[in-house]
Length: 400
Image (cartoon, rainbow, N blue to C red; front, side, top):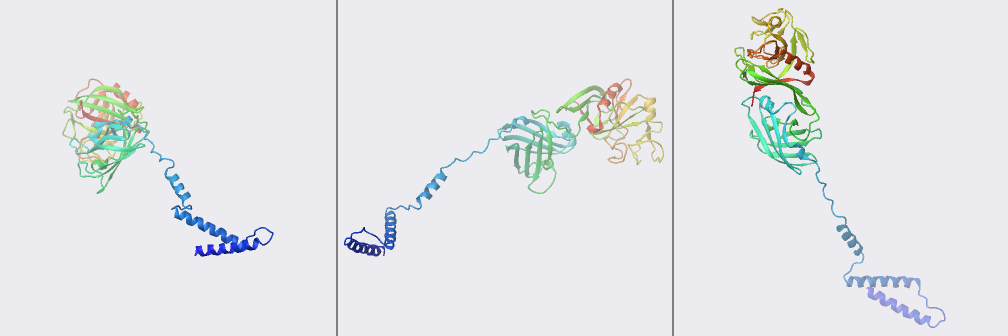
């Protein structure tokens, strides 16, 4: 078809040339024929290009694609500049004063063993409270980036499976979140969620544990070393350490009305009491002639302070006033091992009563369960103790 059109155009041109040569003017090509000729030339060029195997219209597009493929190289992911080595050491929950406290009150102990880049080698052990507490454990290497990582565990020794989310915080603490991939619960490792701090890692904790003051009683038989530790500048500092005495039968995890042993464990320190208030930030109660401490386990006031005999339902109680005026007691603090001494909350009938932490005048001797130190030492301790610091008293064997 294109060839026929081209031949027709050529015949027309020949005719025009013949006519044109007979006149004197220039050779003129009518506009219509000129357009047809131009179209025929373009068509001819297109056919020639096709014959050569080239598609001119697609060439620029291929060049653009090639340019895109060989453009700017891929950006590499930024390196993790977080210093995990600062966190190598032993970590305990902020609700505990040290690793031994974890074994007594229960909790978790986290150990960061090593850190190479973002690969953090750790072990996490959770124990239930008590001397025979059951332990669960997870250990492995957690891959971290920008201070965060997640570790998947399939068995913690209690049959739990789940994930541990670990975040290394700039305040010098580690946040742990344990989540179960099976049945929900808070046993074993699943109960380890919380904030952890360390006293032996390079990362200094700028916050504070829940208990910022602790009287630590390390017993050996009926004798003891009694120390006051306070949390200050990111570490526990021992400010006072003196000799003391505990029960004639040493210490026990099962106190009762029939034993002469001091309760073993970690307990809150309650209010102080005596004839005159000392310099202290603990709550204070003044002992009067009408002050009694009930030791009748059948009474609704068992192991409680009573200021009068009104409503008396007990058969036995200790008259505290005579202990301070005729005896050697001077300043005392309630140990909340069996209730707080003011209400029946947490009181176990027959679980022990009238056991205090006291400063005494004169020579120290073994007790029926109280903890004794010299009164001058007690006055000094009282000057430090502050109820807003949530002080506790920890009683455990020396050297363990």
